[in-house]
Length: 354
Image (tube, rainbow, N blue to C red; front, side, top):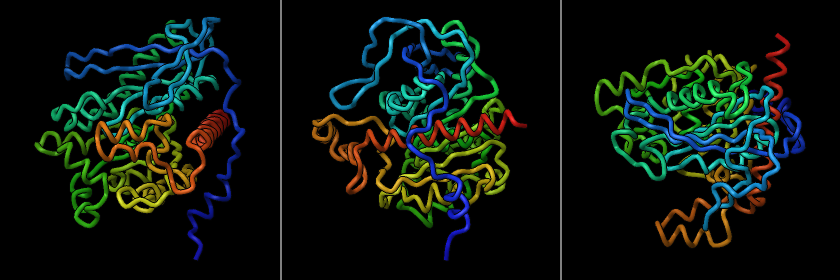
């Protein structure tokens, strides 16, 4: 029997690889800053990629012995015109550089792209106290939106009617939450008794985000930022704790991209597919990339990367593996970029038609 959701979505969602949202931009600027936060003692590292006006030779950003970086000019003057904004949210134990490939590609298409390191759940900050404040992840993104929109001289002016959030893994959960999804800790705890093998359940226990009544109440609260006009999740986790009511009434268009490679820890059927089924059909797009793994949405690995990762932390070499008989990660990421830029362009067109 044909799944009506998949049939309806498949008919409207076959997207070619050549789609481009905006005119190509040749010069890309890059800036890094720290956003202070005296109230929560939660300073944020934020980076911004943006269309620039410069003839200075670009340099590689986020390039190291393991991962391939992307070219940009540090502190380049921004293009004066108005641009849509995309904010990126990384996964658990990740960091802003994981999606540098996407940030660079979208900046070349005319987007301003901001990314933050979420305290407690990032590569170099594993503070248990900060990790438990899971509800502050969407607030981190709101702070990034505040910072970028208030500084047009630094990054370019933002089209405030076009602010999207893209999140990978736990970042996908963050993107849905900032769009209006509501999390029910009791619902998630019950589901994890049924599906204890899911990596989202294991990560959730490590973060202990409901260790106090105050944290539990905050996590279940309304974390929406009404400035966000579209969201994209890349193989997200923790979605099974989101209430069906909040997902059914999510007020912004949503693109759900899943890794189709078989996975016991994060199967598409129990995460991304389940999420898409509970979102509004008219404003939701679901795409499953058969040869992508959960880590295909992270930076491309250099030839020696897997060995280096295994040497440093046994088991981490999986980060460099895509699905069986997969296309090169660069090709998979070209497809993902095209899916995202096409979705954002169509979302903008629909908004302008209203």
